[in-house]
Image (tube, rainbow over all chains, first blue to last red; front, side):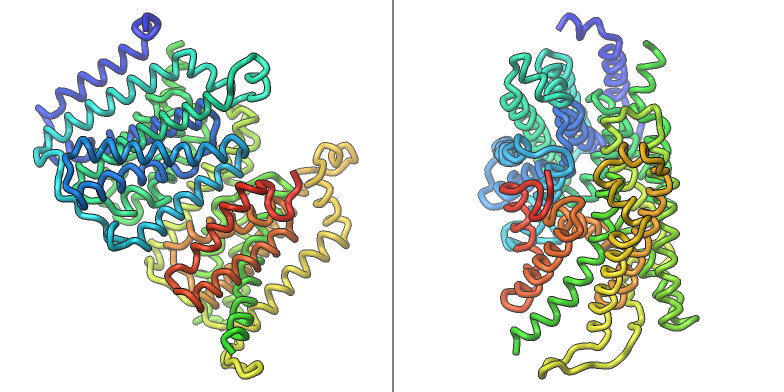
Length: 306
Length: 289
């Protein structure tokens, strides 16, 4: 904890947070709505970074966990009308169960093989949504009776607070002994085991934590949007964006993932007048960016300072 | 009757799946690259064939599509894959994830450009031959039969090239022990160029035939990559025979599901099979560890 308070990154993050907190005074509801979305996205990317950057698990399907959380919460709310916090917790619980399910093959497989399992998990989830269209709303999406708030500013603060707390916990974890052990397990499991660390236990923990935050963020996003559809929370394209955000922002930095997500979402919106070409331009900028600075935006900034 | 129909339809679609996946697996086996822009390359060949078929005829269009596949394959290698492989800023053990992310982004760029110029609606390439053939009482479009024949011809040619020529044997050696090959005085760079060329021809052929058989839309580039990837992993990464076996398993499973259960569920059994195989036999059906 003391180390955390002394690190420069922590104070910069705090400054950025304060600026973000006073933002509603000066900008329009449209910008707030965009940033709200970006903040939830940031949590997806941070949770992915914990699993990939630290535990070394190539997860092509971050949206499997996000989608479970989102649909778990959404379906419970629309079927039973239980209050939002209960539904969000239920969604997060479902995502953790999904994370455990993914962790079983992850302990046996490595690299591209595990990556494929995660990819297939997303495809299967998407198919399930279509097959059980009566409960899930199918391709069109599920309409949810309750929303977090109808006020832009309130929604903005909920998202900002949620991202800040998630970021604080995930960043703290990554800088703790657990984070170091995870990194060791990811880079050389045999040696980590030889040093006496229980690789299986630590990886399992990483999956649970990553799934918990993905699921929470997915569930909160659903209650912000008031709808859940495969196109917003499950589709592989969404997962790809999460991965690009995390790699662009900087792997193994946790906070970089959130920065990358905000940059990506805002860039996509700024370029929207270009219509169809906006996605092209975002990818065309991201590709050389990844080639030229593989350690990501935050990685480059940190290297220049240190 | 229905059984025969399934047998014929399944055969053609499986041959196409096999051709689509075989280049992907060859590329991985020889150079260790998983090309996630695969679907994008198939898409470009199909769209080029579709665009040009009206001006220079179905055969000219198909040839142009094939050529487009080769051009796209080289562009992928020279613009995306090689810079990553040569970069000093990227640590060696992370090259794989960078190639994956890089080709993924490249695939999205291809897809968006195609969508911009030809919209997202599906296009069907004009078939090389028109008409319907009747085999043992089952009416089948002649083009479907031609597709199966051409797929197998391309696969056979590739087999001959790899197993019967000097360059092909060097390719095979590179997949087993690249360092040993360099010690014997072979330029690894040339072998990589060769494998990308073969990959381009296979992907181009597959793209054109796919466009004529099922039609393509810029929106399925991702799905095409995913299904090629699934087939390749099911058969065993890097194993050409395994990919063909897996292509037939997946093709027939899908056809049987579509005919006997429901067309909307056609991909589910194959995905389940994939999950089971990956859990129980992670190296794939015919893969080596």
